[in-house]
Image (cartoon, rainbow, N blue to C red; front, side, top):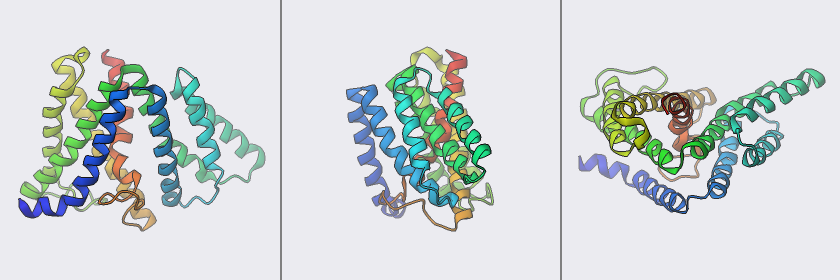
Length: 252
């Protein structure tokens, strides 16, 4: 156990700093502040995604920046993803010279960040805290369950993941999710949402692993000590936010 904790020291310290920063921003509870912070993180994430996708065209930053500015003013931000996609497709057809890979960063991670800010604007800061706990519990539970009970490989994309770890992570996420869920969903709703969001975060992490394997890199970046890049840290949230928003719209 002490050996495991020792190996996690740098990773845990970074995670704790990020968690405290989130608590401060959550306490202020300002849409503008969340939009600003998410926007900064998004631009770093797009930079990392650009590298993973092998995209050389720097105009992707302009597309994403304009989209994110529009997100602040438009009441239904998710709609804007399709507007930008239509605009890109129209230019591609007209000019026939745009890099087809440009659409990839618009889908991941940009679209996920739009869903993330929409989750906050529609359901409030406590839902973001709930999402944070679910994904963090999934990672933590999967790590310790995998180290302790892991025997069965989960997927070739990520050889270190085990089925036992995934199940352990989901169980811990549901347990923590019940205690941190919003009142509007009830206990059954909390269990369902926590379980599905937890599983989606596993595949968010898996997709990030796939992109890194395809690009031949270990991490998406090096900005976060012990974690690597921004995408290495938020991959589970980027899938989880989309699924949580859809589920809450159905349940509430």
